[in-house]
Every structure is written in structure tokens, then in C-alpha cells.
Length: 84
Image (cartoon, rainbow, N blue to C red):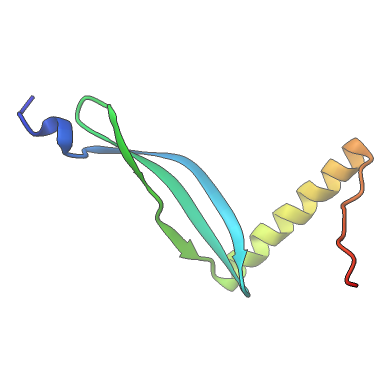
């Protein structure tokens, strides 16, 4: 192991992925850990991208399906803010 190997990223590890609305777009952001040659965590970066319309529709369909399953399983109803 070289002198600088401790400070040079060699590996990455995707820790999580998040989809969120940003205006009319849906943005996907990743939480990625950077690791050196020994596998020690050095830091985190958060790359992301804007989804295409087809990708956005697929994510929306998954969300609607999962939301319906959650409501059916729990008997809960989604809270809606009143527009007063």
C-alpha cells in the first residue's frame, strides 16, 4: 500500500436512492460512499439526474401501487392539507 493510498478513492458504494419532485420534474439522487483501497470510508457524494417522462410515469405507477397496498394493509387514509 502506497503512502497516498489512504487518501485516494478506489471504490464506491451506493447507500441509497431517493426520488423527489422538483417543480414539474422528478429528480433521482444517490447517496454514494467513497472508499479507499483498504475499504475505509472517505466521504460521500450525491450524484443525481432528472427522470425522463417514461421513467417518471413508471415511478408514479410504483408509488400509486405501493400506496394502495399500504392503505389496504393498515386501514389508514392519507392526510390531505386543506386549501384554505
